[in-house]
Image 1 (cartoon, rainbow, N blue to C red):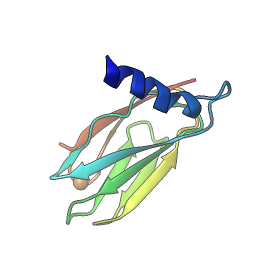
Image 2: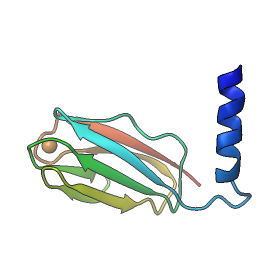
Image 3: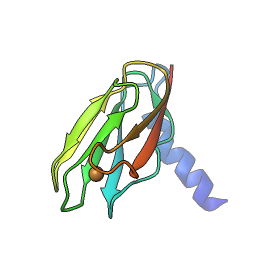
Image 4: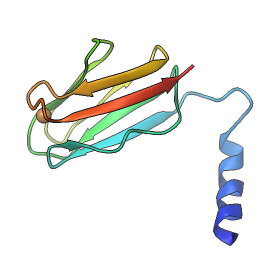
Length: 103
Ligand SMILES: [Cu+2]
């Protein structure tokens, strides 16, 4: 209970009437994309932080984003449309993820 009210207070100033664009971070580690971010909206940025020693990409299946991720680097893409966007790494097809973007 105490924890929930503290959280609500902390979040209150971050949610203005017209939500400002935000950046959502996905960590790439041990050949896996981290969990899909929650609450992505059109205009938000998704950033992938590659903690692996391998080069990866975050490549949307429909081509709306294709982010090159050098080892240790961060790459990002702005979500320009609403929808569900499955993506994968071009070098490691078993690495998959999904971004859900709300209008
Ligand atoms: Cu990869």
